Amino acid sequence: MAVKINFNEAAAKTHTAFIINERAMTKSLLRLSTGYRILSVADDSAGLFIADMLGTVAAALDQGNRNIQTGISALQIAETNAGQIYTKLQEIYVRAQNAANDINDINARNALQDEINNFIDAIQKIATDTEYNGIKLLDGTFTNKSIHYGPRKDQVISISITSLKVENLGAYMVQGSGRVTSDVLVDAKTIADNINNNSTLQKAGIEASSANSSTADTFTGIITVSSGTVTDIDLNSILVMKV
Image 1 (cartoon, rainbow, N blue to C red):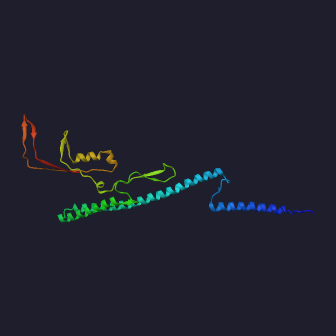
Image 2 (image 1 turned 180 degrees about the horizontal axis):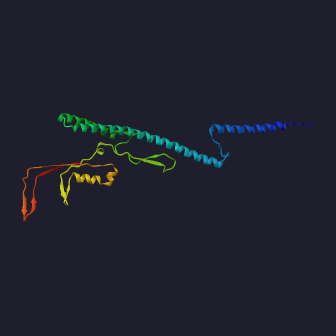
């Protein structure tokens, strides 16, 4: 009995080519849909390792961007509240200028002082209570805070906000009585000159002005003269200094 096997070689080749093309088309569509050139180790083992590392770096950069956005949000809150403090300082300045007008009587000046005290309390409250995510921003504790913006350990920026509490704002006044030290009168002008000649204070934008007033009582002291030379002088005097 004869057995005859029919084999269509052309059809077999066509089928094989169809499967190969189908697999290639599937891989191409997968690459287009994912955006990845390497889909498995079989495609490029070294390239897959590099791609994984780049993916890790990209994820870290994405997180760094979110860290920066969080930091910006905190700084925006600090900036807004610092602006409120600045506005209140302006109001205090205006009322102080108003109180300096001698047309005001004692009651008017007391009322202005009450307003100033209210502004001072408000400034203290803003500086003490301003926070972001439970972290105080304006009370002087927000110093050397790091924001990690990149995938490497040293890719950080440091942020500090100085205290805006009442005791850390404004000018300083030095008061005292004049005295002679090494033949130099230590008065308001001397103090102001020392401040204005200090390079560190100059860089910080600090400048001092002085005004001296001297009110002396009627002389009731004793002057002792020995051989034409004054050896002892006792005077009642008061020297008021303001800087």
